[in-house]
Amino acid sequence: MVGYRIGIDVGGTNTDAVILDEQDRVIAQVKTATTEDVATGIETALSRVLASARIDRRQIRHAMLGTTQCTNAIVERQRLSRIAVLRIGAPATLAVEPLAGIPEDLKQAMIHYVEIVRGGHEFDGREIAPLDTEAIRAFAQSVKNRVDAAAVTSVFAPVSPDHEERAAAIFRDVLGADFPVSLSYRIGSIGLIERENATILNAALTGVARRTVQGFEAALAGQGVNALAFFGQNDGTLMGAEYAMQYPIRMIACGPTNSLRGSSYLTGLENAVVVDVGGTTTDIGVIANGFPRESAVAVEIGGVRTNFRMPDLVSVGIGGGTVIHLKPGGGFSVGPESVGYRLTEKALVFGGDTLTFTDVAVGLGKVAIGDSTRTASLDKELLMAIYRDIIARIEETVDRVKVSGDAVPVVLTGGGSALFPDVLAGASQIIRPAHFNVANAIGAAIAQVSGEIERVYSLEKTARTAAVEDAKRRAVAVAVEAGASPETCHVVDIEDVPLAYLPGNATRIKVKAAGDLVG
Image (tube, rainbow, N blue to C red):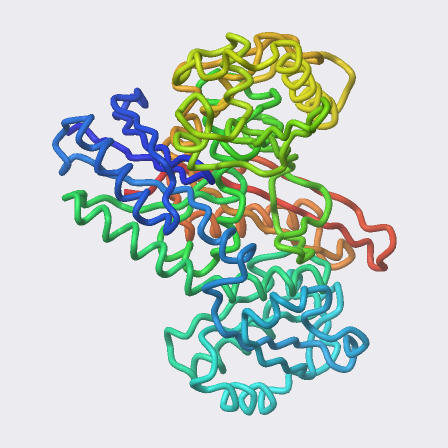
């Protein structure tokens, strides 16, 4: 029996949807305007792509969504859950309290209660202090009916998660078996403060994630689609619905990474620079061995410094809807404002009154969109100066993400990439693959499910080969939990970094595993 897949990606300007057959061929694609409440745009895109495909909806097996809703909740400081923040680390961590580095307006948006209790571990798994279970139980009792979720962080939890797991059991005993508890060892890496911040954000997003998952499943059911729902992760892979509700922080950057994965699939390139041009921003990243290159440094999300896995992306405030400001007496400035999803209302070529990057490209004859006569009165030399300035910014950013001075293949994707030229400095070739304007939705539809772990091992206690095998086993288990088929799950990347500053011949091992969708 034929099995189809739906891929939907929500951007700041457009919501894209595709349907693929079992040979990964695109049989239908649509691009609709993103709506203010997001959900309406998803439902519209879903309805239109199904109408275009004209297939038996009972044969749709999987539906994938890459969404900005979690990102928007943090940036806009809205719809965040009330949380309890527990740090296990007294007396070792009292110098810096939880919520360090989190902006005040974000703290106020997620009403919180904070407690630090005795416990935690050394890097080699030895206890700093016994876990104070009575203090945890008293804290849980004190926040009953006041919070929607809890964030638990323990010292060196990625090495030994025992105290975090015991704390979670107490929370659920007091507050209910289904109470959402975010554990830091499942979210961030070794550093305490950044890992704690990521865990706090994850807990604050659990309500948004639940509504997103339930809304997507309801939209599918409303269209007569009985498919397994999956959601995009930051690394260009997928996770199942239950996993997504537990770890919404992993959805933060799924849009750009979907574009990178889609670009790799459409071009067959495993190593390239991808320039994804939307209506509001241009996201530039690197495909390394078929997957988005991960950032090697701590990443800020909504002003919060975190250390969980995120793609190495550079966003430039240039897109099809970027506003061009003309200065009295000559000169101009580019953005950073954008008309976004209102491009077809605001741009000159669509009858609006705002000069945008799209109008500049149309006025120069680079692309045929809308009514070009509405740009006829604009000074062509000025338009060319604006266009060259924009392209120079993109070329400079491409140069920044490259790891060498050599020219590399550059893949142009996204609806706004039609505005760009066929030659860019630093590019060995410019590739615009088929279906480039919906590469993000294709990336969501063809993605695998992944899992990743990072642990510190003492090689005085464990042989290196045994440590690596243990890490691989754990990574595969996380991938299976996220929705990967156990039969197809395999290790795709291993990092083994000796930690010379720690005693005991310590090493940090990071393993990523991926597999095909289950079901």
